[in-house]
Length: 143
Image (cartoon, rainbow, N blue to C red; front, side, top):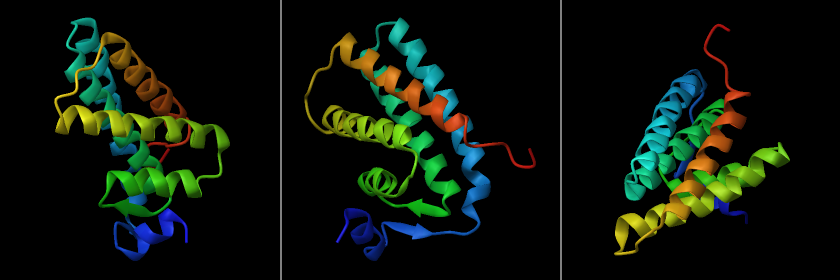
């Protein structure tokens, strides 16, 4: 059984036929958090940059999930579901990298790990690349 199927069975990913209307607003939040990540990186606040960058990644990924008519209750399941179900191979590759950032964010938030400017720059680049890719696919309602 695929991981995404297990996530659905456990209720960690579930269908919501109305949620696709919220995809654009998720992307709007992603853009705001991406800008925050860039700003905090410029100021040398690497922890804030990584955390804001991850939120931009997470919100971009949620926008994709919402367009598929699903919601999530797990960050892990969000990425696994998308990696296993999205057809666009370039988007899947970005999502795999984004999932690695999810692990980095987890270490940052729940351990005493220290991260460098290089890590923050990587996270911001991934967030920017994912946001740009998703923004090409998600449109404002009624557009």
